[in-house]
Image (tube, rainbow, N blue to C red):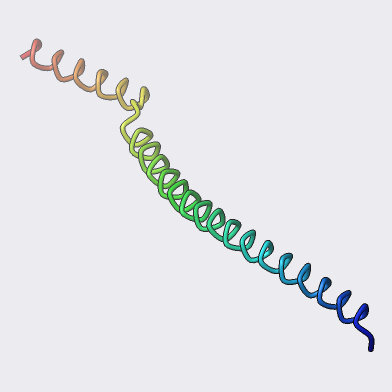
Length: 85
């Protein structure tokens, strides 16, 4: 092996180490982004579950017109009984 071959090998190793450092930095950056996205996703899931609970609660409290009509009819019938008495 001659000096030129060793110089070329040294340059390639230097480039390889530089690229390795770049990839490690990129990996740290992407890992940070992934952790942020995971946290955002977890919060979104919690928000969605809360919204579903609110919707369910609103649906339970929604007016049932047929029941209201039945109640009005029964109250009218009771009032008529009271008036007749």
